[in-house]
Image (tube, rainbow, N blue to C red):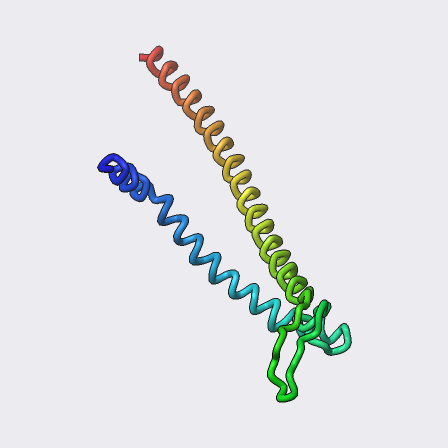
Length: 142
């Protein structure tokens, strides 16, 4: 048991857990932003385009609800709520597009940094060779 806790302590000290926690918090906040964008901006526009009905209310009723004479629900409605599914798909597509763009930008930046680093190393190597040659020539003159 002691070994388990020492391994757990080492795992936490690596920093991966902190990075993961930060990513989780940012991801949760980003999800709220995307959900608001979809719910409050995109879906009302979609609803307007399809006749003004709220897309989240779209459903296919399999069985109607049953009520007694007083209006009390006896049996709940059974329905496939495909409007909510459409909204969730739009949420997913926006998040996936955003992650794709972030990964693409990160990859492009990494490739540029790698290219610049290789150029710096090559230039430094060439300069070092010239300096060594100059020192050798200067040593021969002495």
